[in-house]
Image (tube, rainbow, N blue to C red; front, side):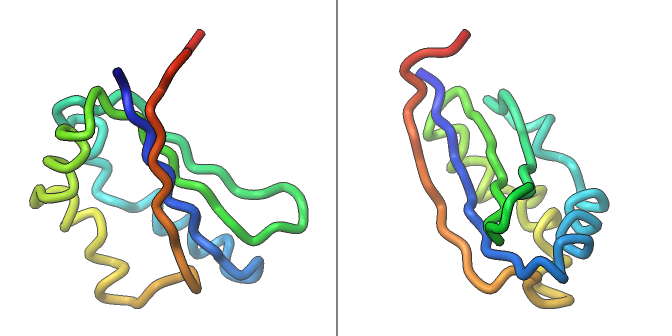
Length: 100
């Protein structure tokens, strides 16, 4: 059964472009990670300020292996170097019950 991880990141609207730029320039190694199935970056088109980073994984173990990997650390280096764009974030986790 696949699992979905959603990082809900609160980003002030005036920082949306910076948020998008950082994702565009990230290491991009997630697509080659064992068990990786999908990635989506969602920006609100209404008044919300919560952006969603959605990944789908073959298993919880595959996700945990990715988070512990050097590629994950490299992909988040800019956050450590330049500070966060968002003001808070929360990880949501779901089991995929149906998919078409």
